[in-house]
Length: 605
Image (cartoon, rainbow, N blue to C red; front, side):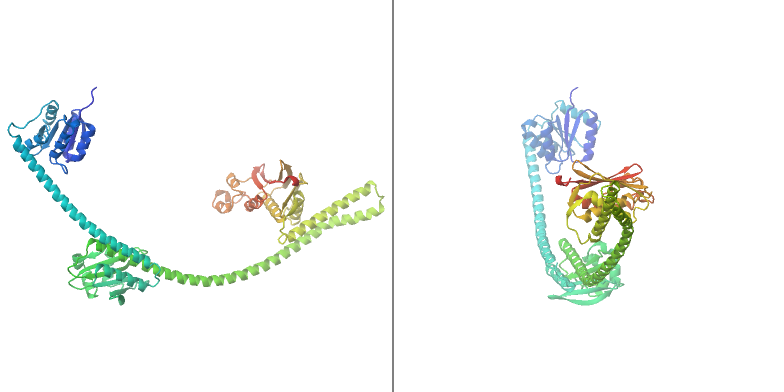
């Protein structure tokens, strides 16, 4: 199957192009379209079509110029170029042939004959100028080219003139914007609102050559608009305008429409009220700039009224500059007011802070005194319980000491009594040692060598004495009596207490607490098992995550009766990390298993 023949149509009218495309596309041709002459030439170079349909009246390069340019390209010289022209005079058609076209088809196109006309030119048909008329037609063609070039030259000159005017206006605008930028940078640190307005009004008057310039802005209560008027080398206050005056009331309705200028202002309902207030004179060129409130929707923040000579209308770039200067005035005034309010608030806050700081110191002192009293009360209670716990071993010492006096040294009974005495003495020594450390752990925070199992036994004994275990069965399996670590007693005491608190803190009271220790692969393991109920997987995964309780306050697993990890476990992990220790928790049986794993030094095992 042979490929479709390509036909390029250079036509600026989309309606004509769609008709050509529909007629020739249905006839089996591959259609391409260019909207203007230069684009058509470039597409012809790329496509090398079988035929070019060329509109004579094109924007930019005319059809005659495109035909001439196509004929100058050796690669395109053999392609038939057919002019599409609405001109019916013979000289116009002959001009098309002289410029390089091989034929012409009149517009409007006859849809019943158009396809056969194109196929005739594809088949080799060529139109020619009558013999003897080539010279006249060439002269006509040259005249058309000259006229076309003259028209293009005039268009270029007019474009250059407009471009020069635009460039001059742009330079003026850039100078004004540069000066406005310098002004905005210079007034950043200006705290006085009156001084700010005076400097900004002075710049507006200088840049725009104004005779009259009034600036009003609403007061905080919205009851009236305070005004300034520019005078020579300064500003002066003018009579305020009530908030319910007809001018601001009417301005509020159109404040988002921008500046009101010239004849529009003269014919507006604002002219007479402004004239009565002395905002402008007649005759003059005047401008009214409303300023919407930036923080309060639908409210008028202020307005400017400007006036100058009647023969100097405001140019577009000047109107833009006025809007920018007005916006700068609004922003800087609001910032100055905000800075003033912040300064006042800062002074008040500083005074309040001094009062709060003084009150805090008094509360802190009272709290310290209260903590000391509470601590003394707790220690007194603990001493009382210790006394009761020591009664049994002391009584045993008394009985066994009396029995020793009557026994024969070296007998079995004597050895048994000595062993009981030693055990009772060890109990007393451990209890006294644990109590001494508990009492002085805040003051004694120096590191020391600690036997971990011994410390664990002492802490569990104190916890039991304090009544935290209740009637639970304590199962203690010592498996690492020689393991020791160089550290601070209070760190391990707090960690053990928090682990026990977790084991005893389930919603279902655990009947026992199993505490097991062992050394494995250079690590000391402390395990605590309970039957206080399992923990939901989501809470279990966050057991050592700081502040996890804040997030769980909005989760389903925070409902009553559902177990959660003890809130102090994350702090234990942070505390033990300095000892190269890790903690793990998992559900185990009807409760949980908590494991503290501590890496030991070689000499500490």
